Image 1 (cartoon, rainbow, N blue to C red):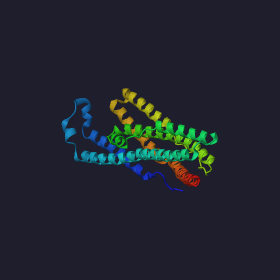
Image 2: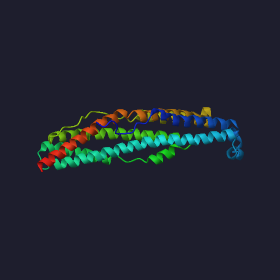
Image 3: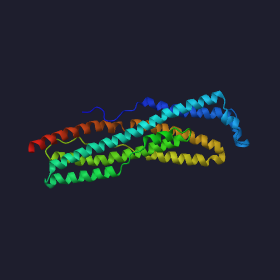
Image 4: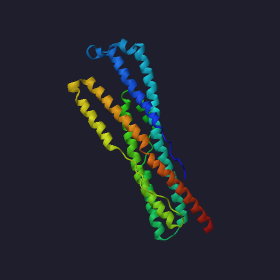
Length: 275
């Protein structure tokens, strides 16, 4: 059995976006305390924007470095999802091609699950689109605003992986039945779903809207501070989920892919014997 089919992202890498979150928060406080608060009443001061204090400038440089590191985490998560989906499609395509060759004009007992598997595979391919890991990483690296893009990226990723696991599970079941009807050992198919975490995404949106409306009480700057703090914390929690939640599904793949490769070898042996 293959021990690993997808890269495991160490949980310690969560410290990278956490560092970005904290550094930009400290940067905002330091920048505000050195005179940027006067912007609200007196217009933008060029000296504040062009010639910040060395401490504020140093925090900005560290923040940019931390944002780049956090963007790498986002890139890794999105790219892992892309590679997982593409590898699954390639393996299923190979299995279906081998089963079509083996089945030939067989009985309906073989053709029914095979046709169902082909239809499920078509739905799987049609329902998946590769996401640009580079684009989402770059958007997530934007100071402050990038946390909103990071949350959107994690939401899209979790929804796509949940849909992928549901559709591929149906195809695996049909492929397993087809393997067994042509006289080879099947696969150890079980339910290993991945969750979309839609409730978390809706919570972020609702809380952000409430905090934006609170500007009537806290002021516009106060509401922006609350939005940054809450969206950032929710996004950090979501990154943790994106790292750890698919682990069970990936471990399941290490077994089912090994079973499928073994079944394909058995099918090839049977085909050569028939020939």
